[in-house]
Length: 315
Image (tube, rainbow, N blue to C red):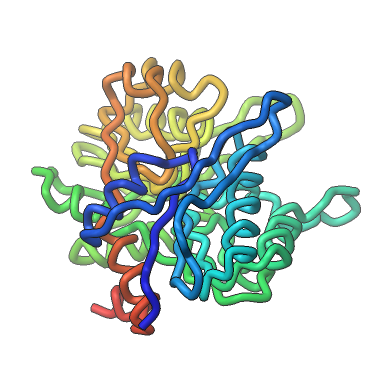
């Protein structure tokens, strides 16, 4: 069996260290820095010839820098004769640009990124909760898209919830809400249906389901500015919800997210460490961050040992 080695870029160093600790190995020695003009400088400082190499790097903001770091690290590993290179991308940036809207002259950037990674020499990709599952098909190499839900479910089950109901913040998230509700002993679901009656009229939040006097669990794959999420929470509270918790795998938290969440009626926001929290977000006092390290460590171990990754979720 080839020697397993873990390396990390600068996007998620704490998560990478936690994964290494779970696997009882040290992170590999690599210098990932910048030249004076801002170009990325990478040097692998140990022998990786024939090794089973895993590079841990979310392509979160600054997205282009983190993506380029990953690509350059893959190239350095390939030129150093690594046996197999797996890119571990907890959060896959550009995933929302996964299709061309009819008649719009726009790129399919998720495909561009997939080609970029494939062409530079990656052998496999491991990621969590892709925004669109079809992105797996954009790659010419195997992609393991694992679920972050078990980590979030553990937190839900540990809470003393009163008559809980799972809420989808939009019609597109109903499948996720149903799966979460099923895992919580088939509890009820509710759906927030956003509608704009006509042009230049503000959105109306229609609620499908009963939430009065109940704890609401809004589930989504990511939270960006949090605007829609905060409006959904407001609609739930207006209809008598007792408490509103928001759960999401990826804490993108861009733009005015900190202000939106701090001033919202949300009781708590629970996310994972696929993306590090900024000091501003942590200061809101409403965000709890759970770690994906145990799940990712197990997936990495299974890939390295040629074991089934999907079997992690077959129960």
